[in-house]
Each structure stands twice: as C-alpha cells, then as structure tokens.
Image 1 (cartoon, rainbow, N blue to C red):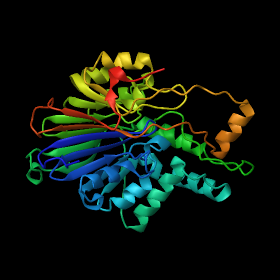
Image 2 (image 1 turned 120 degrees about the horizontal axis):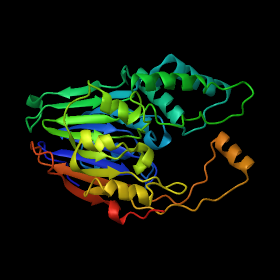
Image 3 (image 1 turned 90 degrees about the vertical axis):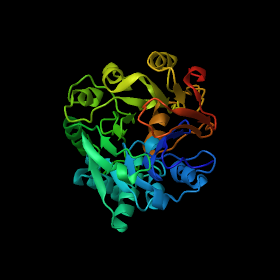
Image 4 (image 1 turned 30 degrees about the horizontal axis):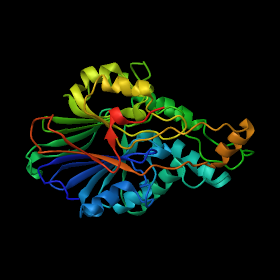
Length: 369
C-alpha cells in the first residue's frame, strides 16, 4: 500500500465485525484517529498497524486521537495506540475525566479488581500513560473545536477544523448521575465495571477541510429530546456550518442511531456512507436498517460481511454469572475489513474514490439476519 499524496484527503474506516477505528489524512502527512479496535489477524491496534504499512511513523504523523466513548468495541487497544502516537493530542468526553468517574473506577480496581480488557480498565491505562508522559487529556463537550490547522500548513491550501458535536450539557449531567450509580458495594463479587446502556457520552465529530465536510456518527443515539442525542446537535446554533459528503453511520446502522433531520440538515443529498457491522447475537444492521440507509445513500458500504450468529440460550443464572465476572463465549471472528476513500483535496465535496479492502463490501451485498 502507498500513502496518500500530500494534497489528498483520505478516510479509512476499519472494523472487524466487533469494533471500529477511523483514520483521516487531512493533508501534508497529518493524520487523526477516531477510536481504536484490534486487528483480527494479529490482535494489534488497527490504526498504527495501517500507518506502518504505509511507511509512516505513528509517533510523528498522528496529530489527534479522539475516543468517542468507553464501550469495548470503540476502545480496544487504545492505550497501545496512545503510547505509539506520542505527538498526538488526546481527547475524550469530559465526563470520563471527572473525579467521580475516576474514583468509581479506582473503587472497582481496589475492591474487586477490574477484569482485564474492559473499556473502563482501558481508559484507566490510557489516562495513566498520558499522565506519565506529561501529556494532557482534552475534555470534549458539544460544539468544542478540537483541532485547527491553517491552509498554509497543508499542501492543498485548505484550512482544517475538527469539532466535537456532542455530548450536550444535559447528556453530561445525566452521565454524571449514572456514573454515581456504578459505585460498587462491598459485598459485590468481582466483575467488570458495567458500561452505561445508552451511548449518551458518544462524541459525534465534524471535520471540515475547505468546503469539504465529514461527519462521524460514532455510536450516538437519537433520544427525541432537543437537549439529547442527534436532535441536540440539529438544534444547536453553535455547531459548524456546512453539509458533509461523507457520513460514518452511527451505532452499526441500528435504528436507534437514526435521525431524519441529520440527512436533511447535516448531509448533502445522497452522501457516501460507511458502517461497521456488529457481529454479535442477531447482528447489526438488520435488513430493515440496510433498506433505510440505502434509501438515503447510493454509495453505502460496510467494513466486513457477516452472518449473525444463532442465539444460544443458557440458564439465566449462568448468563448472569458469566456477565458479572466478564467471561465471554466467543464465536468465529471475521477478519478485519477496511473501506478507504481518497480524493484530490479539491473543493468539490463529492469526489471520493472508494476502495473496498480486505473483505469490505457494498451495503447491498451485506448478509443480514
């Protein structure tokens, strides 16, 4: 593989059927990374591995890392990613850096021990690396500018800005209350730090490069509340202007990540879209999800094909015990797929050349339950 030209924009969406990582080349050898996942073939973090195959040094070329939320499928290998990308600014949702959150995780670690591999322990390890190396974890709330680069520093001559569009103030407050409920009791058995059910802290990101715009939906859900989820973003008067020609579909294409106003107000007509399937249980996206997305996008892609695994029922008490101690029953994992988009760095926001690499596919051919 060859690296993009210095005047090219690249979007690489990598996903193994459980997890995702997104890399964006904004020009002149500068990259940003959104979230982390593990390669299925060698169990290494996908983002630095890809950059290495392009002949690039992650320690020099990555300028920004954003962790959208602390669910396992968006955070695996994060500490190794942050350690490898020593020059990168690190950003995460503000609530994940509060004293309440850190004390809760410390209490789990001290009283019960965090089971290895949990999103919570990965966050703790990452923040420790950031502190040890004298770096700073930048806090993200709605309408926060995370990064800015003038056009004079980029070969294509277009300035770049990266914004966090969420979480909203109300989401932040609700999450702090939920974090308080995570505090373990002295009599509880050792178990994983529980994840919050909804993705209220998920950071949707907006990247503008000249007139070109990119919208990354993370796992943000729609709550039908003007102060929460996608509706809060639509309602904001402070979000950056424009319409995006690329959309990373939120939450594996699930209906709970869908908001009709996003397609009308934030995206060009018939944008290019990519999703990462969820290859667990009955799987996502459902056939109805595929049809809904295809009604809005002709150029719609998935990072990997999948066939949903049959649901195996166990005795409820056994299921509960397995969950509490962090035991996972794994099925065959499909190899990591990769959808790569490049353009010439022009002002035309609809010039994407799409490459389907390593088992990725058009959404029309995705095998759904």
